[in-house]
Length: 150
Image 1 (cartoon, rainbow, N blue to C red):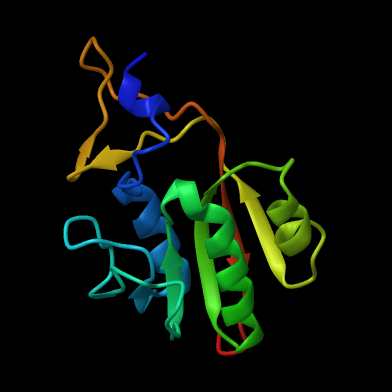
Image 2: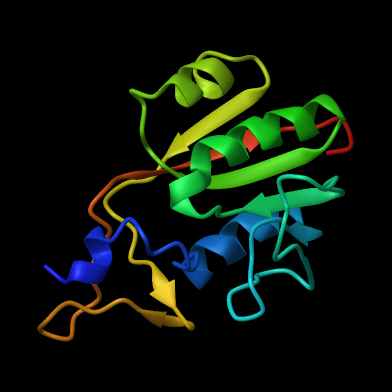
């Protein structure tokens, strides 16, 4: 398997476009709260310090996976302010963050994704050594913190 898939230092994996479009049809995102100039999915995006600035509108988040637990906490805090936040996350159901902010909470909806996602970098799939799109080594989930305005 390609080393890039196992790298914990690779925080720039992009959401597959098909998945973002499917979620955007449902939630009509205003803001991508964890993006770069290369991988943002919304017209408005936060590329730095997004954990320390207010979010607004309907928010999409595919956080750097090395910081996903901090982003879950931030999403919960923004939900407390009435914001809808939709997150693409690793399905790490054994963590404190999952149990503290997501599991069996009346404000969160969890959608486990079937199979393994094939993430992108620079709009192209991450390839294995045979040139085929490489699935992530972990399952994924979409977590929805549904705010008051939606």
